[in-house]
Length: 225
Image (cartoon, rainbow, N blue to C red; front, side, top):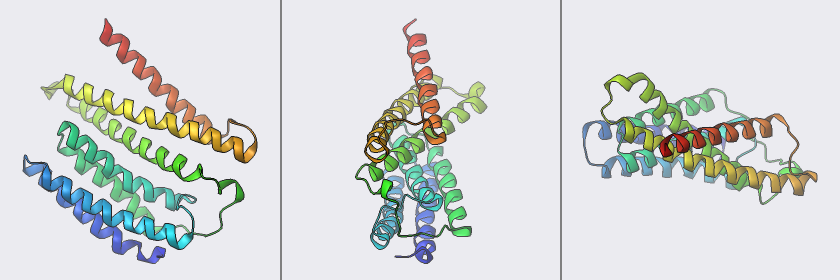
């Protein structure tokens, strides 16, 4: 599998996600939207798997490879939100965001080199990055829900339900961020001899984690009063 094949997987995936989004907006049943979304995810992941095999390493090194995972996990997060809380618009938003990353990858693909530096040749590398990608996709879905709430607050009839959904998604996202940070610390210890070095990625990950912890504690304290 090479990068030249990407468009043949990306377009069918986006089309399937678009059908799922349109069906969800027009019909009350969740079965077909879920089915089309899963089919699209299957098509898209088959390209990721093919790249993994051809590169002989996880496709997680370059920005283009990272965008692949964002494109994959955004519809996953949208599907989870839709199935659990029934908000039909979330599939459309997650599809649009995923399509943006896909278009960028089609327009400006990175060179996918097989060479992986020794520090990245660790069993912690793939789960650490994949868990981070999933957590950021979940938190991205939270951002969409929050924006929806802010722009339509005066017209909403179910504000408490939306806030509960936001809280639950934040709990899931923060849990996965925590797992990703712990795995990253173990990996850093094995590769560089220390758990934490305060480089830009680690600093922003810590800032994100702390910011969401403040939100969680604020919501819990407010609810308890």
